[in-house]
Image (cartoon, rainbow over all chains, first blue to last red; front, side, top):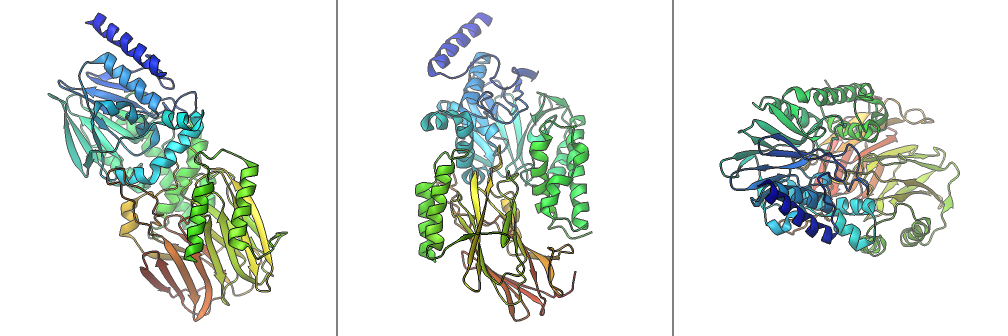
Length: 320
Length: 266
């Protein structure tokens, strides 16, 4: 069996090498694939922004195997990242890849989907995903193409693309992998306005996507108050472990929410204070949540932007 | 005006590089020459020396919301103010036409920035002089797209307004002038967003016109476009002459009006 898997992996490696795609057991940017629970595999992403070197393999991506089929949860940050993940799946199981699930609209999670086009998967996403991708997809692909470099056609192909969703989730849906049912839940605006989570009841594993960051500073691109509310809901789930969107392959749950909850709460508190004192949005970027500096990687790259997004939301609250 | 807008959009489609290089001074200069010709052909633009200043972050932290501040010499009798973001799909962000109740010492707003780009502010005085100033802005990285943050909320709150009096207004305001910030809830959809499933474009719906009057006197009228941020925000100074009446018209001709008792000195 192991021998057969090895042969299959070799064949795939040669095929992939022939296409010029990066395939090794180590992802270009992130750590190696980890089995965090029976049948649940996660590749932690590099704690960096996208570069030509890391091939945008910066998000936690992976898959869950049932009796009959495989579901990919976030297919990766580029065509190469997606191809790497697909090769790892093929080296792990002979079962068909029947589902792609997008946790949200960000490019580091979905641009690898092109690598799965030949599997003709059911593509499960938030009901808001298609419109959000319409608004952002071209911008994301051009941005990553610029980073990955090379000539235009090459860079565009390397950047990848999302496959269009075929199943839009309004509130909840089940994904049946045969003997294993994944519960998909969709939320109002939080990290983005197209967030969904996957819960595997069999192993009590919550796949949180970017609703949970650990180590890397959370990036707010939706609603701060919405995110705090959703985090509260997730903490009430009977999960014993969580797969964050960025950070280690797994964390204990709900203990793993503590850092993010503290950061988001601090951000909200500081901005409400700034608003009360008549401060403007220009000041927010430089002044709020400074106590969190040193506790997060990439703090300087994202805290200012989080402040702007949060300020824009909270300035509409009635003064308390 | 409509044909000029069309010409601008066409110009930007024809000339904007598909994969904009990070910095290309020659291309940037050529683009501004094209825009200047299209927008201000008949006028000589004098580089500003203190008449007008344009402030924005060097790097856009959030491409969807870049705060910009236009500071003007309060002694200048200002007729209009133009804000141009050279590499945006619709480069002319907005034109402020000032009325008798305006104190055009400083104007702040928030805009979308698509790429590494020059920005230009052009001031037109009542005696026919034109001044220009420019600044360069680097785009944000990663997942910062010039897009809607919360589409559901944007529609739910459509047309609502807030007025906040600003205690720390710009320096050099004449006696009796006050500063206020106007917030308007509106998604400002640019109509370039294609739904991947339906292959339909989200219809454009953006704020076209904001008219602000104090009593019977005009403070300003802003002709706006798709480059204003979602939920447009404008900070301005004026001489209160009665309640502050706001009328907003969007590209679907929906009109939203609100009158704030205002007049208090904050």
